[in-house]
Image (cartoon, rainbow, N blue to C red; front, side, top):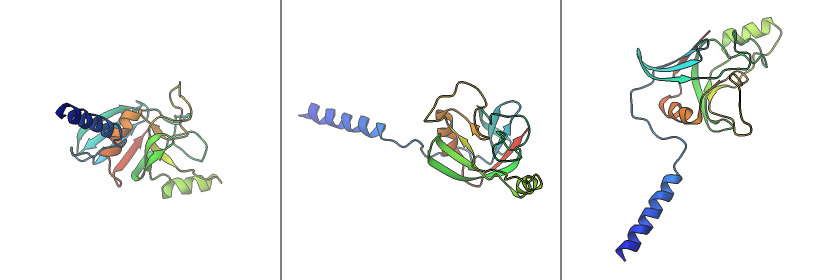
Length: 164
């Protein structure tokens, strides 16, 4: 009888582990800043001056230069904030970047265009596979396991600097 109880308990624990959410809580050092180096295809999570994590990233399909208008395939450059999160993203999990800012909007208006929006740090696509680097429409992409870590470590309001 004890063996049967133990087997039922084990089956329950294994089943419960499989139902865990895509993200878990984080109790490490606070991420105080995200820095993206587009030319190096790297993203850094910082706590003060200490680098907590480094990630290889993919960018927009036209990665050179700053995003100017909707549909240009460029990843924006400048200082922004993490301002939202999507646990049900088409790209596994995603963290919103506060693009466009006032400067971006004014620049696009001078060109007679819309600046675009919906720029995120996100995981891999669900509906198709990606075989080439720099495939997004202007977002910053990482592997699903990495966005899981980033999603739990980074709070809304965290500043992000995206450098050329």
